[in-house]
Image (cartoon, rainbow, N blue to C red; front, side):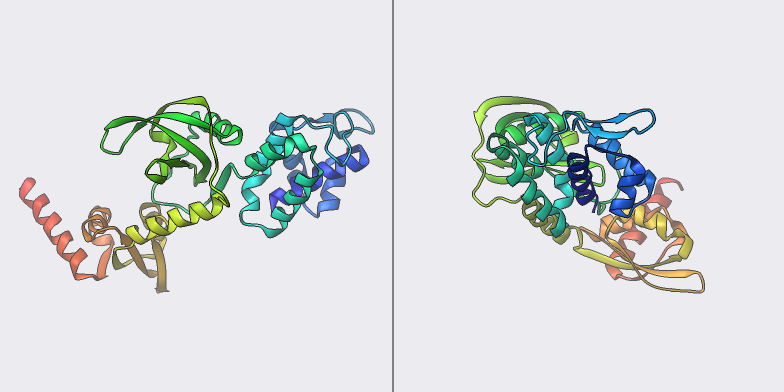
Length: 312
């Protein structure tokens, strides 16, 4: 996992003082280009890692910090843990490396470093269409999670209704470039889409995190609930195999190829209701044939009749 490599690169520089991308690549058994990207990622995250030009140059941890990490400032330690923390949610090796790294930090840095490591979860699985722009508010919310401060959200619901509420930010999730805030509220734990946050104000009121709270586990519960809702209606569709990619872009993870033969694919798709499945498929015309699901076929006939009447 990338988190392992980033931590290993940092510790290697602390031990040797200076390393080249080629040396790091040989140590970690990756390409030179990958090693260089890892070094650039550490530097971009705010870790004091800089390239030294000239003969005998390479990448160096400024200040020659020792393996106890005493050379890192509080903000630099937080930057490192924000950077490598998400991968630790899915890698036991990365999680073990972070635990060791926490113990190596000065006592005063540990609390914020642990909060930074658990501030973000990366979930690459898609839920339908993709939003590639990272909201500007993510950094503000991330700082509030690390500092454990309540935030005042100006939130716009799907219906367009706006509300202002004070919540306890517990963590952020990047799900295929769509960001979600997991937060505590008087009604219990809730999830907010960050792109619906019109404004955020960090308050001075401290957040008391629930005992034993793990962001990755909390997000798993959210995904389970959403998945249960999103798979209420299913249909089997036959399309040309070359069109499966387009079908996946519509249904996200709720699109599974059951079989392929002679250039055709049987694909299982699902959505909350038969109407929503039909709405996705209506634009395909004869390119997609629903072979299983009377309810979806009935909705397609109804939609077809409406279009025929409208454009008669």
